[in-house]
Length: 310
Image (cartoon, rainbow, N blue to C red):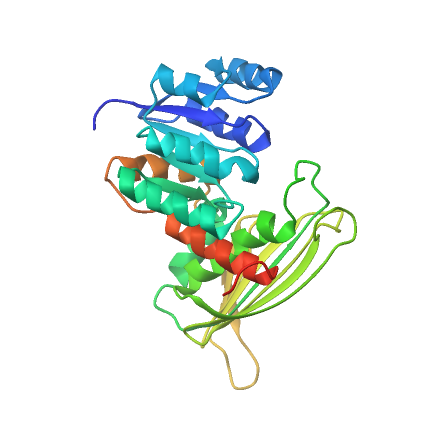
């Protein structure tokens, strides 16, 4: 496939606007246009991105696209992504994949039936510090994973709570880093400020026997995102905001140890995600979060909320 892939963006909120900004300059692609049911939003994003604004998904399809990035509210994911996949368009769908497990399964089956790529926007996999951590723990015996994610209440979120907005990111990371499935879950959630839960403690036992814990809240005035992994002979501390990674090793019987910073190649996660999506469409790689991955992370997240069996 030597021609440029023609891309559209559906949803012009903060994530959609960022996707359009990056897609505008993506090598091997051209941004055909953007869609939002708020005309003023799509017009503003189109103007900043040097592209066209369309009123409907069907109008965008009529303009001719090969792939679409969907950044609508979660409740619209199934309807929009289904329309695009059935029209023969590859889809990069923001997380979570859908509102329900049934909708998610239908999207996975639709993508398979239509032979189209369905990628899910768990962008933390493309955080350069997390990518460096993934390489550092490759082949090692991971025994424990701990993730802390805290920050202020986001005005942009209204349709889901913190487990489906942020916790689902970390559920995906736990499965990806451990290269194992979640076998057992324990969870506590609480609601303080909004209509949905804004605090969560999630604990998991993996099929490998490793343990994982996620602590997240929308109560803290500053942002914090840290990821720690303990192996049988190493301890890694990853700051996902500062994009740094430190390895602790060479443990002594007297309690001594050595530590060193590991190299992190700086890159923009959203751009890396889009590039991986385009490469997968061209058959040049499989480094995407698949629809099946998105389905499994949603199943676990809803299980933590008591909405679906594990």
